[in-house]
Amino acid sequence: MKRKTIIITGILILTLLAVTGYFLYPYYVKQKTISEKNAEINTIEKDFKNSTDRESRLELLKSTIQESKDYTKSKKFFPEISDQYKTLISSMQNKFVKEYQQIMEENAPLDIGTSDDIDTLANHKDNLNNLLTTIEAEKEYTLSNNSNYQEYIENLSSYIEAYTNRITDIEEKQKAEAEAQKKAEEEAKRKAEEEARKKAEEETAKTHYENEYFSVDVPVEWIGAWSVTEEDNSLGKIHSTIYTFSYDPENDYGGGAMIYVLDMSDTSIPLPTYASMIPSECEEIGVTSFGYYDVFKTEAGAGFFFDGGATITLK
Image (cartoon, rainbow, N blue to C red; front, side, top):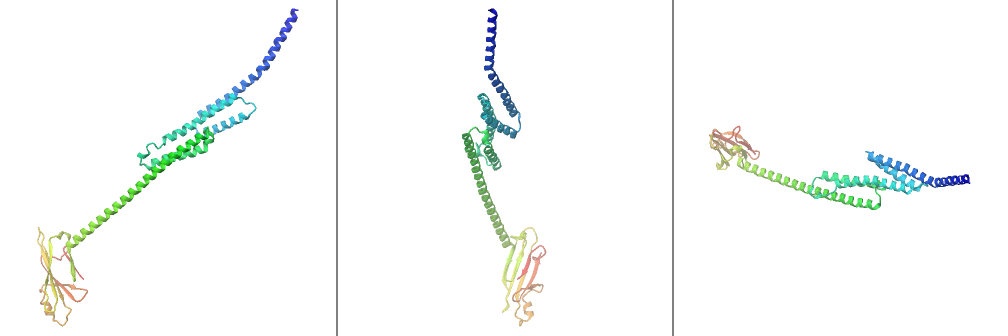
């Protein structure tokens, strides 16, 4: 009887162990599967953190998202693993989101109204445009929902527009300033030329004498120290004029000259008559190009028409 009891007890224990094993084995398999998958996910997380190359991190994020989708569709699906994937993907996405935020903060148009540096403003604008392009290309992987994407688009577009408007304002201001500067320079040049012309005219008026027969020019240094007078020297039908030029400097010896203009067109008048109208020491300068007016000169003192002095030009 005792032996029979022992046998029955043994059978019951074996049966209990078998039943227990039957129910515990699936749990063991599940925990083993979860542990192995967690190890894989941890490896992905470690690789992502250790990667220094942005493109490599992005590719790792893409592949992880795909793995998560594939796992969700698999028959060996465990919610715990799916949650682990979601946590990892969120962490990976946050890395890129922080990068976006940093670029936006570094290029935000906070003091845009106080800057006139077009190069700096354009650089900020380019950085934001590049970020906008990047987000457009990566949004499917780096942003968790469309509302986040729309928020970035609105903020970036607003920033970019602010820089565009500021750059346009500065360029228009610079253009207006350049035009004003050009106008001022042209006006200054015109005034300078006008002043130079007036000065030249004044100097010419002070250094130049002209009549219908000849013109006389004196050095600028002679201004205020020379003079000319005209005297009728006609005799009968013979028209003649005497022009007396004087040079009287303050601290030097002066001189002078007398210019005689005779109308010698009447050949019926004897030459001695013409000769009697001018001093014998006169020398002929020449004849005018019109009519027949002969021009003579005589000088006194230091003279008037000499090298470095006055010059006379017949017409």
